[in-house]
Length: 349
Length: 198
Image 1 (tube, rainbow over the protein chains, first blue to last red):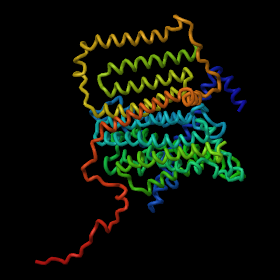
Image 2 (cartoon, chains in turn yellow, green):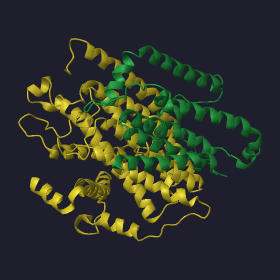
Image 3 (cartoon, one colour):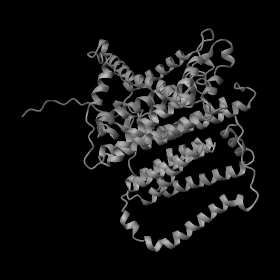
Image 4 (tube, rainbow over the protein chains, first blue to last red):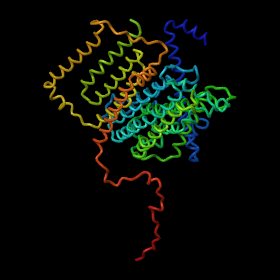
């Protein structure tokens, strides 16, 4: 590593830190895009097996080249702008969606040291950046000048804004017990405790003492991603495809990429905040990035499982769940955690 | 000129441009979008001043929540920009006075260092978490103003509900709680009908 740094400084001089950061960004974004491509493959295979089908199996062995073929197809398609659409905003909207999905990765840690920007308030940063993703949806719906797109955008905006509240409240519990906004500190805080001293690390992670918040976060995350069973924004059977019905080619692909990149992001956050990040579930195995990837894949599998299992929620039921069920659960558990932390039984010291 | 100054001028130029477009754009949605851009660059300038909590909070609260709802409303409204512009000249004197007052106030705040001895500049020690400090101050020294602000917000919330609540609905709205417990045999009756012949 030192040799690389030395070589880089020699080659680029004072510009090396900037170049090195760019290299690191590419090292995060390129695998992420590959992950997105194969997440779509994984989804189609998993849902295929759950519905006793085979899923993609024509392109390459086991259909493994299918995502690449899909990507190439979308890349070469024409982007059609509807006749009375607001052209500028129509084209900016997918960029906004993908930009916020990628920018959040800047502060996501993969191990203790493997993080692009280890900033102090990284969790706040992620919340701020991901809250901007809704603009891609709203603006695409408005600029398309189509009623289905607009209906999808309206539904999605209301849903994302209301679930952000429940999501934020479930995160407050994590902040309280880890006494930090830094993701590395939050993960490190989960590696000690009563169970961890017996070698049962997975019982010391945040999911157990914060179980209600973990459940709320998982479900609110699904809603925030507009995934089934909360996919009223797309609602294929009601409003065709919702906000991106007028998009084609790469502009459509950007929405798709953003959606799946956000899925991986929320799965990563769930793993980091509640499932102990890169720490191994039992004491005798070493910690490592492999555990983080395994946890991310498990959470992603949950999303796919939800989609294959549950029918779509009705719109008013979604709102009721967010405001009247999740919010009170979070508020009650906040008080419980607060009292717990002030009592002699406090386990987070 | 060091890099920070360069970034500052870059962000300020965008901020001024976006703020100008907010009041000059003919399309209300464009105006709202420029306001969002203005908030975002404002967050960038605050981050440059090492006020990371404020920078993130303005994006989280204003860009992420307030402006979404604002945009929501603006998109639904049919704003006729020409009718709004009709009274421009009659409102101009009042607006100009208000604008001048604001410039004067800003001048007083910014120029205070030339008029008197400046207060000690807020030095940021490295390793001090901005967020933590604000939180600690908010719940110790400023706990009463903070609680007061939250009560004002609560009053606003209650007022909004009172304004929009029109009494219990007389429609046949369903209770989701009872709805999920409905069995098919409560609703559906299967009848055996003899075949009619004629």
